[in-house]
Amino acid sequence: MLEFLRFDTDENRRSLLARARKVVLLALQQYELEWDRIQFIQLSDTVTYKIEGSTGESYLLRIHSDRLSKEEIRSELIFLQALNKSADLTGPEGVASCDGSYVLEIPTEKGYRRPYVTMMRWVEGEHASGDLTDSHVYKMGAMIGRLHEASISFVPTADFVRPVWGADHFERKMMKLESYYGSFLSAEGWACYQAAAEKVVSALAAMQRNGGNYGFIHGDLHSGNMVFKDDSPYPIDFGMCGYGYYLNDIAAAMLELRPPQRQLFIQGYESVRRLEPDYVRHLECFFIMVMIENYGHHCSDPRETSGLIAEQPYAQAYIRTFLSDTRFLFEVIEPVDIV
Image (cartoon, rainbow, N blue to C red; front, side, top):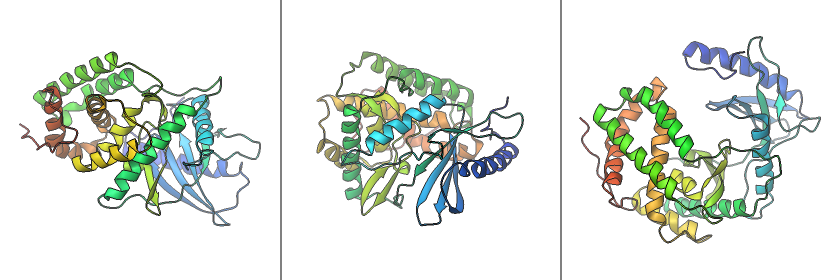
C-alpha cells in the first residue's frame, strides 16, 4: 500500500491534494456540523484545513501522515484536553465525531493507506506580522513557562503513547542531512556540522533528567505555532508534542529572536518557573540541535535550498562559536564568510 501523504514531486503533490479533498468531504459527514467553507491551510507532516461552520464557529481538520499511530494521535488529544482545563492556558482541543470517536480512519483511493483524520476547535488569533515586539517576546516566555508547569502536573493514562525527542531523533536528522547537505553546504561546512552534532550528542548523554527539566513538551514551538489575540500568545499545532527537555521548547522559540529579546524571553519564562543555574550552557546546546534539526527537516525540498544557502553565514557562525566553547546565546554573532 502506498503512503497517503506522498508529495515528493509536483505531480504527487497535486494528486495528494485531490485525494485529500475527497477525504475531507467524507470525514465531515461524520461530525454534527453544518459547514459553509473549507479552506486549505498547508501541507507538511499533516494536511490541514480550516472548516468554517454555518453558525460562526471554526475548526481545524487534519489529515495525518503514517508517521504517528492512532494511539499516538489520540494521546495528543488527551494531553490537549488536560491542558485546556488549566485556568492559565488555552489551546486547540479535539472534537468528537457523531459516534464519539476523536480519531477517524477515512476510506481513500485504492492502493493508498487509509489516513487518520482529527477535528479540533480553532484557536482564534493572528500570527505575528513583522518583528515581534518586546511585549510579545516577554509574554511568549511566560506562556511557555505556564505550558511546562501544566506538563509537570499532567498524569498520562496507561495507554498514553507519544514520541521522545532527544539524541536518537537528532541523529536521524543528521543521517538525512548527510544525503542532502551538498545542496547548501560545502565539505568544510558539513565537517563543522558533524563536529557540532558530536558535541550535542555528548552533552545530551551527560545531562541529568529530573522532574524540573524533563517532561512533556510541545516539540515545535516557534512563532509560527503561536497566535496572538489581544497581544497575548496562544500555542497551536501540538502535532510533534512528546517527551523531552523543556529547554528544547525554549530553544525552538528563541532561534528567531535577537539577543536582547532572548533576555526578555527568559525573564518572561522565569516569571512563571525558574531555570536551573547552569541553563545557558545547556540551552546553547539545544539551540544548535534545533537549528540543525530544522535544516534536516527542510533539506530534501528543492524549494527550500535557496533559503538554506542564505542562512549559512549565520548558522555556521553560531556553530563555530559553539565549537569554540564561547557563550553566544545573549551575544550578537556576526555572520562568517562561506567558501
